[in-house]
Length: 265
Ligand SMILES: C[S@@+](CC[C@H](N)C(=O)[O-])C[C@H]1O[C@@H](n2cnc3c(N)ncnc32)[C@H](O)[C@@H]1O
Image (cartoon, rainbow, N blue to C red; front, top):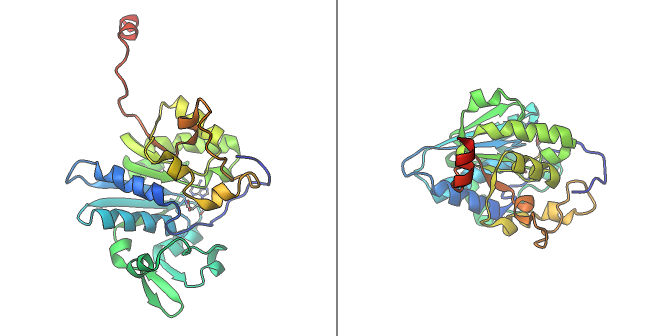
């Protein structure tokens, strides 16, 4: 990412912002043990569009799955909008972007009830989401949420200075249970790569390129805005870890080499 303007936080978001990412999330969720409760946390949820899109995708894919779902944002005013799940049809008035523009008509019909100039998220999508006002980087968040199978932390770390973003990303990692997954996009690539290497995260290669290119607003803003995402460069030696935005945390990796075991004795 390039630093071309002053960093500041934005609330802008979209329903179905990155479809390959939703596809991977559902696929990873479907591999959890049969009958188990799926635990998901969406950090920096803004007005709820991302959390509702994820719940819609998960419940469409696995209608009978029990899901514990937490959504957190630091700004109480957007959490209130998210909790209500009611959006003006002309959503540009709300947060400065056309939040419905990436949805198909049939998705809009399944997701919302339409009421005079407003849409309301349907109960089958809303039910079970717990909304919180909180700081994603607060180490206490773990005691509120508990260990999660999937944590989504998208498009807010890039709005922080690098040291703050790194601190926050390191604080988020313990929310993911061992073997669980962290989705983290919209963060300076150098910050994410450093933390991923340091904490031994395993990049998920499935749909890596599709997810990288899956959000036209960040790819299209490169190199003009600091949040712009550079084109994926496969000639880089570190391309997998640099461009992955989904990681498995704490999973057992390849067996420790025998020489290391002997040396450790
Ligand atoms: C650009 S929106 C991203 C929304 C959504 N995650 C997405 O990808 O479309 C950034 C959101 O991050 C929230 N935010 C910023 N810092 C945060 C923090 N430390 N903890 C939780 N939320 C934060 C802001 O209030 C804002 O709603």
